[in-house]
Length: 264
Image (cartoon, rainbow, N blue to C red; front, side):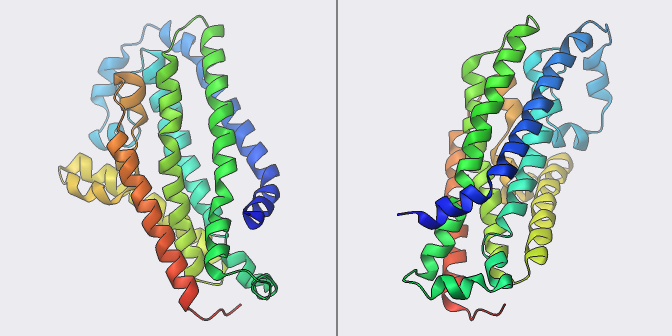
């Protein structure tokens, strides 16, 4: 069982290790930088209030004077919501399209493997990468915070990473749908990047302009690291919405790939 998923996940090991290392280094850098920010004497609260509402909304800038607020705005909103989300969508864009473009899909489907299984297991190959990153990075954050003499609620760090998984899986599912809509890997990946970024901006602009309903279409609306770390608010309903959206997107990908002709 899950041979296709395991094979695809093994091929992603180098990329997973590289991504995890980069995010861990970025997290460690942000943690190490915080004491100098705290000791600077700058009135960051006034500075935050002077920022455009759209910018505050986009990067979740609530406070920079606490380690929770600093990490939420300077690391999680940028690295996890934007960069990691874009990366997973980009990765999702090649899950099926790469096999179709190279002709490997013909060899694969010549075996007793259904199209449904190909799509589902290719998608499941994303899960190990997300789990590894979401185990290593919080460990680095917690240890780093202790080393600089600060404190942070462990349950909030755990929650911000657990709640990121439904969000990231949804981004991957967006890439998966685009991966079955075209046989061109580069087109699917660029489209996934553009769509996820457009949805990020849609939620940001909607919140800043008072048309919040637009943001309901964006995965970022349902994952807010600032609310988790700064206010201790856990949006489990948002996680459920993201999970249902992910299931629907994977279902659409399976349906489309099962009924369409394959043209490499």
